[in-house]
Image (tube, rainbow, N blue to C red; front, side, top):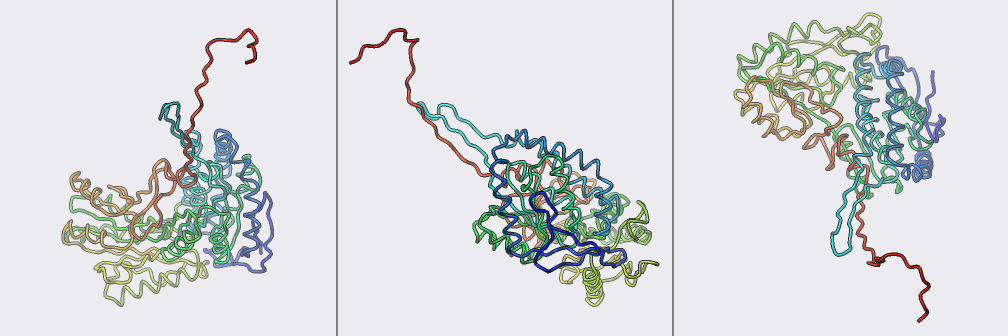
Length: 499
């Protein structure tokens, strides 16, 4: 049994609270490690170290800070396989998916290498008689991030890379379910040249979260997770005077128009709905075919694809389509919601109940499920299931399909599959959802754009990564300067007589 640590001031530090959380291998159901759950005092110690290290880092010019990130990118590529294996072991996702988790974080780090350009201020010459005016973007000081289990590499990098590039110190509170990769990332950052104390990893549960939210030194908090916790963190953080960005749950719809390429749409739905066992905030969990004929054609295409999905542990090779869900509790919740869907009248077209894998009977595997004839009043439609369950809601028209997505309280991502440019443009323009795909099932923006939903999927006014990250992790200071006019005309070669 491995006992994990915190990472404070460049060292692995054992927990002192006496409390631990179990870390599982979801494929086997075995506890493979225990993670320390920090006390308030341990969080305060990490913040104290970070606050002492930050001023020198903030005074380091942005180009030198960017060079650390350049080296970090090299180290991520060097250790990609090692990071992916550790991630898969604790999360359960396949190795290619785990490598993609690291890669999408790496791309944000690459973007942050452009910090010298992004941190340039503005200048006005001659704003008034003898007056110049200019602005500076300066670091906040100490920032913190509370990150989820489903992307233990990507989302921490989405937060700490821009925070550090802007000159801040950063406290990372990763998910206690899969904390090894965040610890490895902190080691790699210091190998890349980051001074000690600037990236602290503190494992913990609600006590650590509350310690972060109430600590007066921490100036900003980022969070990704469920909507109820996002609301709590946003409200508590703002009440304590912090800058806060919180990203919550999702219920992502994909509208399939009658003119869509049905093979392309079915392939997209299978990948977006079942990849990573559905444990993605950008997973497509609701298919909305327009018209019964479209729905029938779509179901006909989906069923054989879903039935052929290979479910297994990451150790079974790169042809595994998805692995287990993260915990036994997550599996039980998914199975409960599936039964609720049946009880409320949805048609279970592909039944993944009772799925069992020989040799992995104790693992947290959930078979793929496909529902048809789902209605908006059903729990499986309203709730984020976060599992390999795809619901089909039939719409009679484009306007009805559009209204379904617009009326849902979540607004993270959506997609439309069509060959008609006018329909696609109308959808992209009118939909009240933050990220939109046109014939793209998971419209996660690249690193140089921003990531963020609308409605109850987000709390705060700035998105993650892209230009918004440099706004979130800095404050603007505006200077108005006036110098007395005392211009001299030529040199003086003689002593002036005293008056």
